[in-house]
Length: 381
Length: 73
Image (cartoon, each protein chain N blue to C red):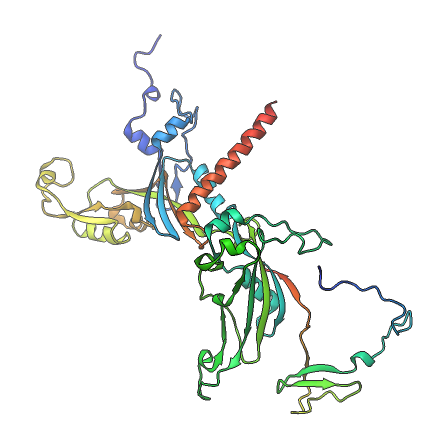
């Protein structure tokens, strides 16, 4: 016997079903539906194969903020595996220049040599983009027993110097308490590091393109009279997976777009309390209109002019789940996150522009895919 | 070139071959820093360990004059 009506699963998914699939549910103490299901074979009879056309159609990028060193943008219609790959590449695989070797001639300050060297290494630097990205190349670490300076050239090593000595300021009054006024060079700042151009570096790093710390007021050490620091430094290019000082970003993170669905009306004093459960600007209060009040079964009957809670900007929500703790909102609100909407936030340390950094991560990803492709080809042979 | 390399001792340089003590004449005078007044103190062999300016008995060795290399990590 053939059934007259096909089973429910053979229907194409409606909007509600699609919304259910792309929402991660945030419940009072748990998170559910957190596994993506958009791969072939998961839903019988549905073709969700990855094709570049489909991806192009569904994918979009929109910027929320784009300052030189801080950008925030949304990637919509991308899988977590890809956006996470971009994030990890941003943190660990985009090269930057940082202090790698410190040659200390003299250090009579209270800060120990190795601690001083470590502090110097963590200072972020900026310089001419052309020189940093194209002129400077990788430096190969010398083997044990090899001449350590034989591999240092103008195209892979940048030399910096720091020579400061603290002296008593003769113009200050003897009763002066502030060490910054009583002594010269009481504080050593990142701006005291002197860039020494060698060879062709003069062409790429001169004037405002000179290699200098992004934040000139980083405190390196404190000195007292007759203490001095004399040292030279070598900077090399490196990547974040080798050491965090090479990471081009201060933070590179994403979060999923929060969703707030008010399933039953929240009115009057409850609405005000509801708005207070969220950060400012997430929930707004509106008056119930005549039309809504007239509609039977809407929950607004006879409530014309009352305040009701509406979602204004879910993106501003921190998903604190505060509203789920109150009994009066039980069953009236559903919290969730859009599974394929990633709100990226990238803060650069100064060697790259923050939007340029993301493009660079895409470039690295592409390169990795090309390498993998070649290996698969070799494997199949 | 590396600044410090091991110098193979040559037998002809004064000290007798196989001697475990080198002659002290070359470094009979050592310079220290006084822990009390911070002044420089030079002590000869068998001299009293005290600062001539303030009689402080705590003396510190001076930092090496050699360059020290560190990795900034």
